[in-house]
Structure formats: C-alpha cells, structure tokens
Length: 462
Ligand code: SF4
Ligand code: SF4
Image (cartoon, rainbow, N blue to C red; front, side, top):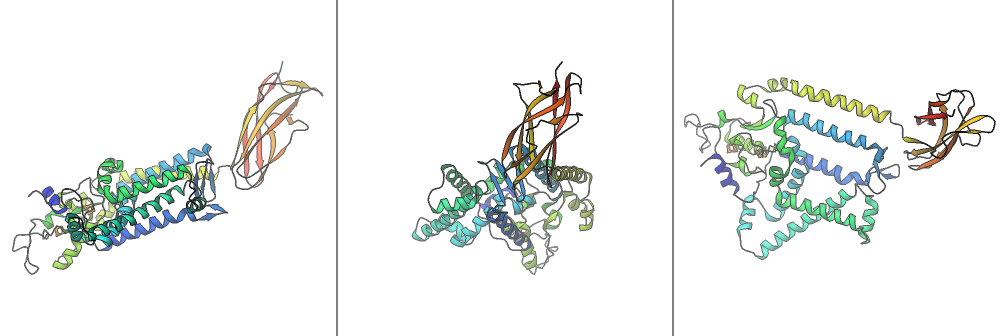
C-alpha cells in the first residue's frame, strides 16, 4: 500500500476522526486556545474612559482603540495596520513556517474547542467512529444532540462577541435580553455563529485545504531554512512492527514502528512520513504522538520533529539551525517591517487629533470695505477628534498686514468628537500687497493638543 493509501486507510476516506494527542506541543496549543479566546471574548467588555476600549463603530463611523479615536479620514492608519500585519505574517512564515495555522488561527482554535466538546459527548476516536457507524438509537441521539447544542451555544456566543466589536456590546447584551436586537445585528450574530458551527464542526480541515488563501501562497515564503514539521526518514525507515525488546538494527529496521499514531492524531489527515505537504498546518500533534511512542519503545525522541529541510539533509545541530535564522530573506523582511513600524508609530505620534478644512466663499471673491481694506471671506470647518471639549484659536501667518476682521471670532469651542463650521473674514490694508493672489496659512491651535496649518490664498483685486 502506498504511503498516501496508508493515510487514507487510517483516517478513512471521508470524515477525519483525529485522535487526542498528549505532550508539550498539545499543551502549547491549549495555551494559545485560552490566550486567544480570553482576548477575543474579553476585549469587548473592557472599558476605557467610560466607553468600550475597542469598538469599530460602523454607525457612528468611528473606531476606538483604547485612547485612539480614528475617523473615516484616518483610513490610512487602518490600511497601514493591515499592511504591517501582512508583513509580520510574511516574516513569521519565512522563519517559522505555518505555526500561526497550527496554534493561533481561529479555524484551528475553534476546531480544537469543538473537538474537545465532541470527545466529551462521543468519546475517544474509536468510540466516535463506532457511534457514527451505528444505527440511530437513543444513546446516539442524545450524544449527537448534546454535542450540537453546545456547539451552537459556542457559535452564538462567538457571533454575539464578534458583533460586539462593531456595536456597543453592553447595549447589544441588553437588547438580546429584551428580545429587541436590530435586524442587522441579529443577522450578523446568526451568520457568524452559523459560520463558526459549520467551519469548526463540519468543514474543519477542508477550510485549511481548500478555502484558506494563506495555505496557497505560503509556499512562496518557504525556503530550505524555514521551520517545518518533518519525519527523519533516514532514521525511521525501513518501517516495521517489532517487539519492544527486539533490536531494530538486527531486524534491518529503522525507528518507525509503523503504529500510524502520527496519522491518527493529524487534524488534516495526512501522513507526515510522506514528506512536506501543503496540508500540514504545523500543529505538531504528530510530534507529540511519536515522542510518546519513542518513549515507550526506549528510543530517542524526535523521529518527527520541528526542523528545516537543510538541517535534515545536512544533519545539523540546533545551533546550526539557529545560525541560519538571520538569513538574507529574513533580514530583508525584518528591515521592511522595522521601517514600516517606525513610519506608522511616528505618524501616529505626530498626528494632531483635530482636522481643519478651509473653503473660500465662492459668492464674494474679494471686496473693498470701509476703512480702505480688502476683505476675503472663508468658511473654516474644525473637527474635534478628541474625547474632550476643546477650545480652538484661529490665526493667520505668511502675509504681512493680514488680520481677522473685527467681529470675526478668533476662538471657538467644539464639543468632544464633534465638528463646527465658522465664517471668517480676513482683511488687508489696501496697497499692502500687489494685485493678484497671495498664499498664506490659517493656523488653528488647541492648547496642549497641537496646531494645524492649512494653506489658502488671499485675493487682491486690481
Ligand atoms: S508515530 Fe512515529 S513510530 Fe508511529 S508510525 Fe508515526 S513515525 Fe512511525
Ligand atoms: S502532519 Fe503533523 S504537524 Fe502537520 S498537520 Fe498533521 S499532525 Fe499537524
């Protein structure tokens, strides 16, 4: 039987029934399940300055991330954040392969949780296979129904939490209790809940194999020094069953006892002994399973291990592998990422939390007024992007003699997260500047917050 045939036979051609693994990597996977879910389920409930700490309020068109408030005009920061995340993923993949998939991807995390629930209701891998093959009975019915009830509850809670990132979660919770959830919120709770139930309960490895775009393009970021899960063929082959006491060398065998446990625990149903496959999500369940077998047999651990193609080919030590971490590809990705982070942080740091727009009055370009002065009229729009009331003062610079006309307000107070428009008349004594258009700056300042300069022109008629 071919190796591919072995995997198919062990896992069955249809549904995959992963066996539960035990070991250090399994514990790490559960650590990431707890860490990511603590963040996901907990974050929307966290308060910051009297409001939700992280809220992407689509209705109000405002994104709150702790002390930062972003508006549609700040789309640059959101785009930059996405680009930074993509660069980080490129760098991480070049160095560590698909460990994001194996430990922290929501698909892996929810599959892990759903499998845990499944095991509680339906038992071990063998018991689950027997239950599925058995005809319908009361025992089968209550176990399946119980599992689905818990899955649906997790799915709905996940959908509710997801929507809670886009609409204030406390208000959403109140409306759920009062059965008065709006149609869109209800739609997204159900949709996201259904997607969680379907993806983690049924689709599972199919999502990784056929739907996830990352699985398709991550190969381009791999090289011979990328960390992968690999079977050490020259140590393991030829495979064969033997008694614990037998000396494999006298039998002409390698260390693999062909127990197929590495295939049984694999969530994507592959046989890692066939070599690197795009379906492998680097979860290391097979490492844990095989290490347990090696312990039982009294062989050294690491027949399946995290390593690199180059390290396996060259019998490298751990230190040799670490030396290759800082290779040109990694250095280039790191440099690009570091530059992008510096640009992003600096632009956030110098960002003034208010916006100013200047519009010229189209009806009156320029006119001569009493006292021999030329007047131009503008409308200034000030948007206070902070969460406090601000007093803004107005000034002009760059054209000698240019002043605010008497009666024009030189200061304006704007409520938190609100904007206001004020008319502004500027005057210049006749004869101070030649006929034509003259550039100058409006300077709008808020004490302790910063100032904004907006360019404009002053027209002097002939
Ligand atoms: S778990 Fe280890 S010993 Fe068992 S089949 Fe897999 S590689 Fe061989
Ligand atoms: S081959 Fe091993 S590391 Fe890869 S998906 Fe299967 S169990 Fe996880």
